[in-house]
Image (cartoon, rainbow, N blue to C red; front, top):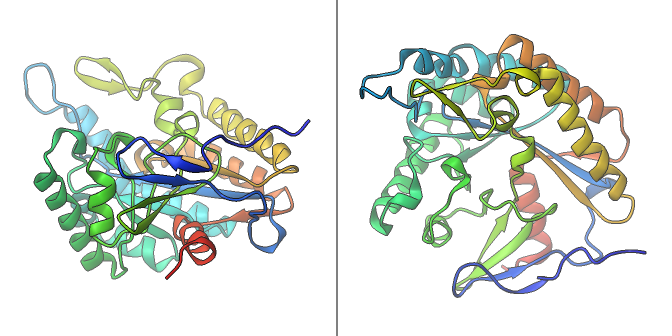
Length: 307
């Protein structure tokens, strides 16, 4: 029996005046691929570091996260180059200012760059004007430093506000990765404009695998969880299982595998072996399309968005 892929092909959405359009039954990935693979990274480095209960800086946590900009991102870039994979990096504006060489290297290596707010702020806590200023500033900073146009976005903590979609469209964005509700991208239409939604998956986020609940608190900071959660081999098993199930299902209909990592987490030496192991596992299968977020967005816009 073939089960229906979804019940919201074209209809109402979570937000008022927004219609959601899923892909048609005859949709397919390029070159006969059965599955698209998106390797994504959230690169905020030390931004958003929690403080201690006394209100003073948590230097343990701060310097742990700085590792992502100083060392981790470079190790990740080497792994991607070694395996011939193009990825997508969601970068916070202030992070790009802290690490301009890394930001430019990401673009020059052919990876896609999406916005991840300026200070890794909680957008849902802001009013419309405040959020718009964050989006505009992030866009300006990342474009100035990377030299590439910024047309994609992932909100910090994967928590958009009720204004995020409209503000992104008003500022010229064409894709975002803020929802978690599908195995395939889809379209959001509002006020005559179209956004490509590329769903994120919390189950494959390295922060959840190494720090469940996004962080375990101890003394005000985040700690790597003990036991199997902190084991890179466990992360590799999760990524492989997620891919294997989707790949098998993709015999019947197209699927998308998306994984999210952080340079300060998966860029550590022992954890980087899990990253490379995942890439080698996936590359062992035929009919796989390694895609950047912009590639997915442009594919859908070319096929389904009228100019």
